[in-house]
View 1 (spheres, rainbow, N blue to C red):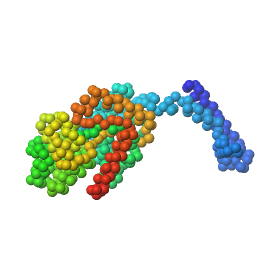
View 2: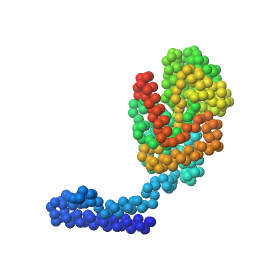
View 3: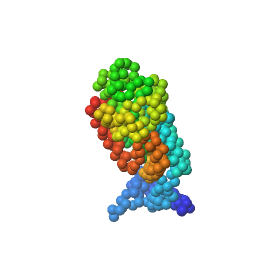
View 4: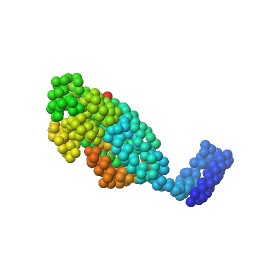
Length: 372
């Protein structure tokens, strides 16, 4: 096959040279062929209405068809290391899950899958790095709903187009976010938190990555005349440390980041942004139970830069589905981490994102959200 391909390339090269030489001779001898008309005529329709395609194009087309792997971009993928960008610092729930998944992908494909943390800029720095990467199947990214859906309603400009710069591969998990406080604060319900904030104005701060849960906290402030201030963070691990030290005693964060602290009594859970109470923490009410309000739960999904070959996207999706369907992986990395598995078909994930974006646009319009 390789010898045949090489022979076809040589033949094609000779035919091209011959065609060009013939055109140059015609140009010198015939005024009508000046300015390249002779060469262009080789591509023009014949008198019978059919295209006169140069034979060398047929040769090159045949060579391309016969080239090993030409029509199967995923056949030998991956042949080298693959990176997975996450726009958060190390240690948080999304980062931990990405590393666990990368380990399994490395075992399956026999190539390194390297997680690269690119935090900062409201998750926009790492997301931009993913959008600008070559769409060759060697860069993927684990993104939450914030940069893909919500940031377009909060930032005046973004260094990427969230609707066009990414290929959805699969949703990964739904994050059960919990409103927790440092136990030393001495509050056990949201009304008690409001009472503490009224009695101690200007002393409380909170952290969250979620657009919708920041909206909830903003409403809580306005409805009750309190001023719990939002503080930016680079990772879930940073938030947990801030609550531990008391510098930021309140967070609305994925429960997977702080299971040990809640179980150990250092943190008190006030509410859970989930569809139902978790068996692991049956005493923590849902946000709907605690306040009568309900919000879409945060999620993390797997993406690739726009233009990545579909065959590679499908191959990656199929492998992630296989990995996350294994009982051992599900027990260790979903159930024991208090997250809900959400892996599925690419088209299903694309629709999920579109629905989230439609809901976010509606909320942004209702509250008069102005990009900053």
